[in-house]
Length: 256
Image (cartoon, helix red, strand yellow):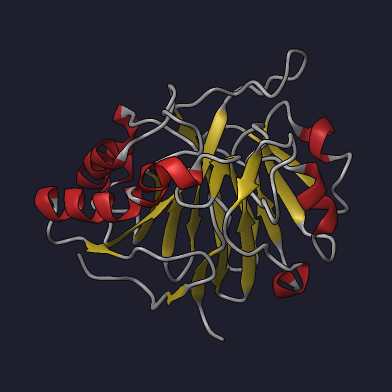
């Protein structure tokens, strides 16, 4: 199918690049804990054959879901923040790599670099990672997956290194807590990072049980709000708003 990026909902993105398949924060079905429901079709594991690497940005249940890890085919390597290795080892069949911001891992022709994320790193009362992370996937195209993060000044250091930026713009609760970006703050991140293409993630997929009917716009609107905010602040950036299951081609370095 060639080099491409597929948005699978929430923060789950499949990156096919230079013969390597990278999956981020797999959440394939409904979120465990009962009250958070997936409002788009579940991801079938068969669509994920041939995975090379799975990246987990942090330990929250909507990003590190053990049931989804157990359902993945094959034995992909895992990248997790330091402190979460023993958690994913309960479900992972591949090698687990704990990383800190700045660490790099070579997988085939890709270099995967852990990037700081401004977000809570606690999974439970007894399990806390050192930090949350994003990942820069660098090959013939460079893709920055921010994970869950608020805007942070270090984003400026990514300028000139990113072709495609995947940025969180919403959430699944009635309000955004600390460590998240709304569409306006995500647009500010675009101004600092200067990617050729920006795409919103972490929106329009998960809803508290029963809330979609009365507050659907709260969850479905951030993608287009991000497009409008970026158009006003950085009109030279190409915005791609993908629905879950949709793909876009990765066509090498994009001139900036």
